[in-house]
Length: 223
Ligand SMILES: [Zn+2]
Image (tube, rainbow, N blue to C red; front, top):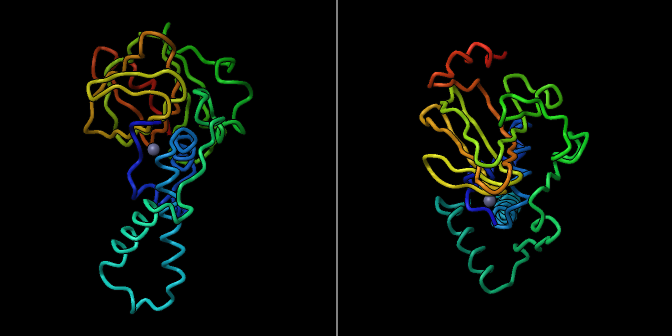
């Protein structure tokens, strides 16, 4: 199971259908790997359903949300509710599952027409397909052991690892992990040694290289 998850407020937005398509896609991909978040989502949906059934808002006290959460946790431990989502081994076991992505990919992950960026980094751009203004959506492939030049972000960068893993200044990440970064982070991910790392990355502003590679910055600009 994944070790790095979106927070509950983001899951709540996802459940409410209020996330933009690229973010919702990232959550959907993470959910394929993560039984923990599937269960959280189920709970959040239950809460939403119960709140809707309580049609008298005046009867809801300030701590109604907490009470509901406690009730659901308690029912959960007694095994009385159906909040536990059935495990789906076929999704959990594979590391290259790209279930929500399949509709957008012309071939399996490793056979995509990757665009070589450097000797060790390639990209499959989905921005033109998942066409949401202001977002850059792409798959990135980093060769085993290779390092991405140090960079910061002007906006937000969401990453979901589809295959392999990487490490950076803040941790080590594996298939299924959901990583959210913003302009306050400066990092240089390095793929784990044993296999290529393939990630879904979503940017809402261009990344900015901070080392000598900053000469590339004008070429990374997009609109
Ligand atoms: Zn999760």
